[in-house]
Amino acid sequence: MVPVAYYLILSGILFACGVIGFLIKRNIITIFMSIELMLNGVNLSFVAFAAQWQHLSGQVFVFFVMVVAAAEATVGLAIIIAVFRTRETLNVDQVNLLKL
Amino acid sequence: MLHLVLFLVFAAICVAGAINLLAQKHPISSALSLVVVMASLAVEYLLLGAEFVAAVQVIVYAGAVMVLFVFVIMLLNAGEEELTKGSHVALILGIPGVLAGGLLVAWVLVKQSGAKTVSLGALPGFPKTIGGLLFHEFLLPFEVTSILVLIAIMGAVVLASKPEAQERPPARKES
Image 1 (cartoon, rainbow over the protein chains, first blue to last red):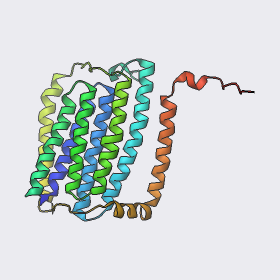
Image 2 (tube, chains in turn purple, green):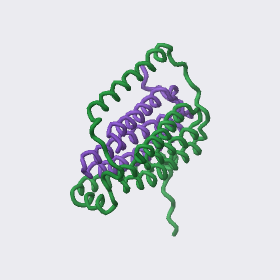
Image 3 (cartoon, rainbow over the protein chains, first blue to last red):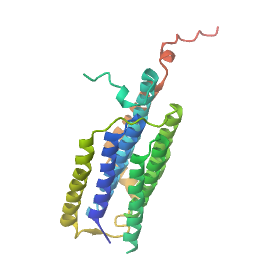
Image 4 (tube, chains in turn purple, green):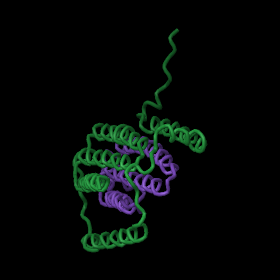
């Protein structure tokens, strides 16, 4: 028997690691990986809540999150390739056309 | 007891992978530690009984998405990232702030839901039951995700194709 809170704390730690990586990383691919890490943390809390309430909808929602994450990964990586082709860099500090 | 031990071992591997993702400079090392995180998360899903989700986690996330990442890293020849200077105030205030906030949230979670526990394999999510739900209760969202995936495929093809490939005149027909 494991308290549900442990799963939620693990999910929170993963999400926090994703947020920290999103903020401190300067490589656009690693930033993207941090987003995937955040999605994984949320998925774990979905499955934990599904087990707590004995309802399978949580697991179905994890499936939907995975589909959306896969679609997001393909489009995002295509955008990264397009950015690299025009700017010749992966550093987000040098992609600053929108900066005032 | 076994459940708790397995949970703690794989949670430790998971957190270690996540921290290693932050610590590594080279993107390929970060990608490999993300694979570790996803694989150990699949074990956590199995402990909760979500067999279908665990299988999809390994196949889609650790398999397909991470292969895509590794291919892009290889394609763009990504090297070590050059770090920009972070502010000292953020370092001094940020780490205790994150720790304090995290401990507060953890304390509240344990206090609020400490009595609620899950047993090993609490809610079996076999592919058959998940599939039944997907094709009956969640049929409309399922069909909408298929359109989303179609749009994602088209977007990836349009965005990643070379600009000159779009402007190339149509090939002359063989007579």
